[in-house]
Length: 423
Image (tube, rainbow, N blue to C red; front, side, top):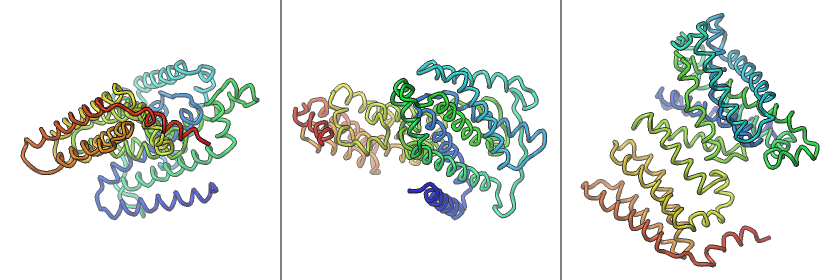
């Protein structure tokens, strides 16, 4: 598919999303949707450097904050339209990304990751001591209540972030299917071999850091107008660094689709958790899903779908199966104690339990093992007396015990690998 046609399709989908959001008549949809779209941009931007090129960046919050404080600076000096501030934030963050890359890209692996983390610390210290932009006290940004044509200002910010998400996705897809993307992939797979083959590795890495930093800065530029107040602890929040890495990892880092899937999934779950339970549960959900994806789907959800036949061998080791099963059972207890609005979060972990039991049972020729967590899901959601929860516990204990006692068949253990390697 040509890039211009893909751009038109993305624009049509974005217009449909905005129209449906307006039809809901609920402003919270725009508040929550803005955050999810913001993570779509951040995850896609991180993936250009971390996924396509293979250089893990822990400084996402620094570039995001640079965009935010660029807006604060010009708001105090001379208020400018937000679209222009987005461009300025992208230019500032892109320049810093280029400079960071020039200084640190000769480092590799953990050394580069630590250098990006140090950049975030240095920039936060600078902002804290810069009184013009509020320093440690923060700065207020007075925004109008409405804008012409669009109306509500939050709707306007949502529309801008929707446009940024389209730009980020189209940019990532264009890079992926271009010579630039092939150069990034060569660096990711084997940088020494790529350099020996004549690939201009340093120049390509500088391009990656510049594009990635610019997109992150563009995502941060509207942030002060979204909250009306910004301070270093909010702009440099750990959430941005963690989520921008976790979302591509969970979705898949080798394609533009992965960060989109991961951001929509995790972003939506976090917004549901914030409303139904508390914002403190967000990182717990992210952490548990990262553990699941690292073990079950090291290539993310997209990789799991593409290579589903080879994933059964992951739970061939009883210890791995038991660890994963227990990790996903624990949050069910805490979520069940919350209000009914927290139940949608339970479905995610019940689904993982069903998948684990299904794959473990398949290795022993007993796919029916998945019926135990399925029955636990049904009993958990059926209204009834409190003692029904004991039935759920018993079903989970039985599922774990059966998974440990069933011995995988030799042919069942090797068949998926053999099929995947067959011509």
